[in-house]
Length: 234
Image (cartoon, rainbow, N blue to C red; front, side, top):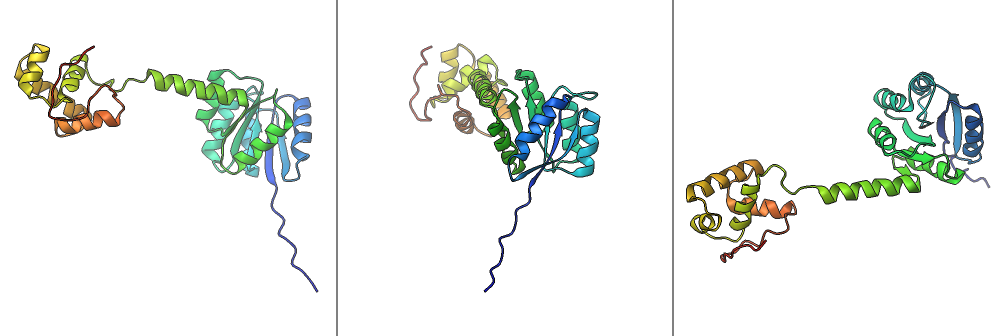
């Protein structure tokens, strides 16, 4: 009786790029200790990294930021532009925000610090080979913190003037233009002009739609649309 042997899954083919041979040797040992990873070539310069990536089409390129010749940022950008099927894991000692941003903008999916363990690197290579992201714990924490800061400081309507915001607040209460005008000490015609400008900027047709769009954008102090009209208290 014969049985079909299970298909052998292909190994993840890795191009290893670092300007220090001792780092390449150590990293190769870590990666090839995993039975599903194979280091197919090494490079010490950005130019060689690009050349080998185009020639060998590795699944993953593991590279440092500081290299001989072209930097890792430049090499990553060229690799993703000319061999987009190859994914990139950054393996570096640099955890500065500007480097993280630059490598992510260049197309890297992973960013691992050399102070991390070998297990983190191996897992990052596996994840990135499947198109997922992988970050060192501390890098991930800083990315989350930066996102939270950006979200907290984002203005709901940076394109609207202060007066237009005041008109929109009162318009959200559902009062007639005359009442809005009296509340702000301006003419009805001026209120109408502000409403038209607001609708144009928010790409809507009516003030009701402007209020709805405002709520969608998270402008929380706008009240529910309704017939009542009350002065706002700052």
